[in-house]
Length: 88
Image (cartoon, rainbow, N blue to C red):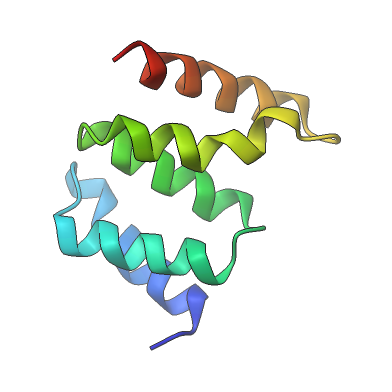
C-alpha cells in the first residue's frame, strides 16, 4: 500500500467527479508524503484540498512550488492558487 503511483492514480480517478471524499484526500496525501518531489501529485493534492475548503493544507502543499527554478508556468500557477488559498 505504499506504492505512490497506485495511491495517486486511485485518488485521482475520483477527481473528475468533483470534490474528493476525505478518505480519498488522505490517500492522495499519502502519495504526496511518499513522493514529495512529484509536482503533478502536489498540484493535484493542492487543488483537491482547495475544493474541499482545506485551505491551510493547500498553502502548505504549494509552498515548495513557489520557487520552481525551471518551470515558470507551474510556478505562476502555484502562486495564484497559493494566494487564493491564503485569502480564504
